[in-house]
Image: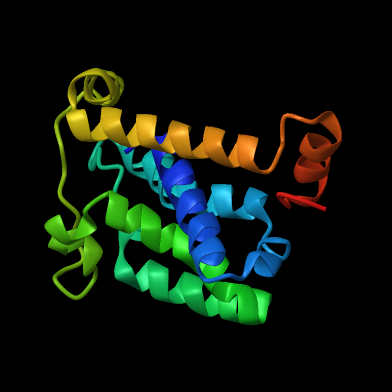
Length: 176
């Protein structure tokens, strides 16, 4: 999945989960700027590292931060930094890994328990990404679903109003 899908689905899970749980008050405590960054964090780190820095030998964009070890360390860090709201910031990384079906790549997801090496690929990264965006139904549906969720959140919380939008950008909150 690509950025809009990852961010949209995770934001949708947090917002809908809190609304269903009748805890909209907690929405005012979540910084959705961080949620968006953390939903993409595995790709922000692994794509440049695996495709470009280590690309000659590896060419794999799902390595260290797509592992359960990273998820556990990141969750522990979130517990320390965000205390009771840690789940809102750890969930995006878990959501990213689930949306990437990481259990289907056990050598990466269970790294280093199943070995220290990651699978190497012989692909043109840019061609692969463009091809996936326009031919892979999962990627296309994921991006459209993420976009739909983000538009719904945008409208539901009236972020089309300039003052609400600017407040959201400044504070990361969906409402005042």
